[in-house]
Image 1 (cartoon, helix red, strand yellow):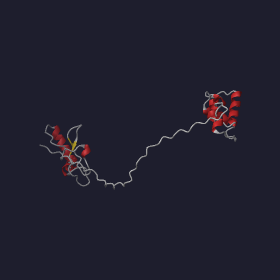
Image 2: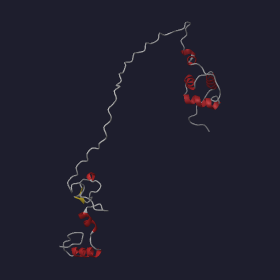
Image 3: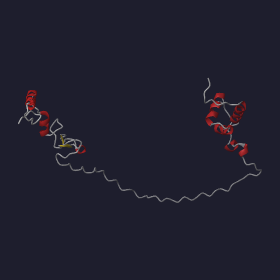
Length: 187
C-alpha cells in the first residue's frame, strides 16, 4: 500500500544519484542537482543500501559542479585581504574591593491594631476578621498559645456556652425578645 508522500524516482534519477554519491558528493549536493530535498535523497540512498558503503571523499573544490567552476588556463590568485586591526582593549588590573556583606532591608512597621490587611499579617498575629466584605481587616494582636486568635477573640470563638443555653436563647429570640449575641446572652 503506497503512501501519499511517496516520491516517484525515475531510473535516470536513481542512476544519477548513485553516480554522484559514489563519486563522493554529499547528500545535499546530490539533492540540489536532482531538484529534490536532502531528506528525499538520503531516504533513497538508504533504500538503495548505498549509505553503508565506503565511498571516496572529494576535496571541497572538486565537489563543485563542473558548470559552476570558472574555466581558465592560468592559476588565479587573489591578493590576501588585509586584516583589520582590532582596537586594543585596556584591561583593569587593579583588584576589586571585597563585597559588602548582605543586609536585609528593614521590615516595614506594623499597622495599628485592628488595621492589618491580609498581606500585613505575620506569624503570631491574631487573624480575627473585622469589617464587611470585600475589605476585611484583621485584629493583629499577639496570638495565644495553640490558637490563631488573641485572648479576647479566642474567648469569642471558643466559649459559646452549652447547646442547651443556645437553644433556650433561640426560643426566647423567636418569642420576640432581642437576641444580643451568639453566646446566648439575653438583654
